[in-house]
Amino acid sequence: MFRPPVCFGATGGKSLSDRFRFDLSRALVIAGFIFYIPANFLPVMTITITGEVEPLTVMGGVWELYETGLAPVALIVFLASVVVPLLKLSIMAWILVLHGTDIHRQRRMELHGFLLKIGTWAMIDIFLLSVLTAVGQLGILASVTPERGALFYAAMLISNVLATDIYKPWLIWQESEPQTS
Image (cartoon, rainbow, N blue to C red):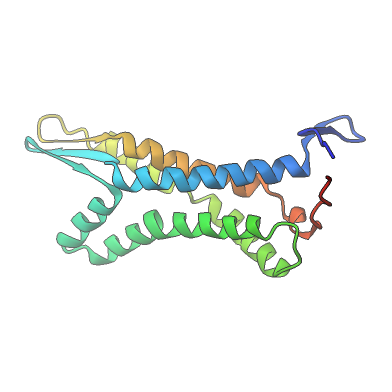
């Protein structure tokens, strides 16, 4: 049965159909996983200190913090920048894989609510990179330049936030659509 991606409700306003919400969320989660790889392997910034140029990946930044004796900060950056985004993508993927089933519906609702709550903090890494870039312009002594990895990182975070926001909680309670031959 064909259902258009846009439905007109009784109020005359536009809204996304439930099937389109599911498909779009699934595509965004897949894109998020794809963006996750270059986001973590390409440099997100280049730091120049007294003429020494050093491109840093997310893990390179974590390692740099650890080596300079800032292990607690390195752990926080590792959790916030590597583990949490992967966990969020994995949770959303799990919710989508179980779409249309009655398996763990209440747990999926709780996890979806959790994703919505922490979603507001998702862009803090990119915000901090922006602040670091602005503050780090110390002329000849030091500078910080964002790199391609930061774009992939931002794209991964945005994909994740949008997937979570587009897939509404009521979709968890819907039964799967009957297959048409």
